[in-house]
Length: 216
Image (cartoon, rainbow, N blue to C red; front, side):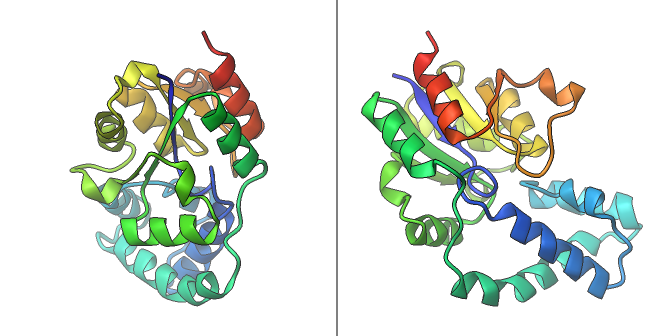
């Protein structure tokens, strides 16, 4: 049986642009001179990876942790009062995949309580057979652990699963796990190196769903 494993932020939910806005505000308020391009590198990154990256960028070994905590503090009031934004065609695509017998799962860098809250508020929870947080595995994205665990939970070999992602760290995680990777670019397009890791670049979730169903 075909399986599609989706990243959440930036892939199912149109939340990545909100995260990036507050990453920049938080970094600026704490006095870290980081560009928007640098902050994009934190998308879907595991804490350990983010800490290393933050130190490389700033020289401060705790920069990532400080910015991340401040970003959460600034962003949380907004996230509690807004309607959770979803990506185009998300419900149509999930319905289409379910109608064609595709198993659906989520593999996200977001912790489980927030994942369930956001998916629930967006009306998406019931589409998925399994919901997995990278916080439940030893190493988060770009390591393959969360996709390997998702495949184990669903009961499918990685080679028989599609990983659907919007950002480089997620693409690298899905590819490293041995999944077939579909990228739906959100804030950045794949570069030449990343293109070597993906099976298909889709314009939106419906195009991705059609590709999965049509694949033989």
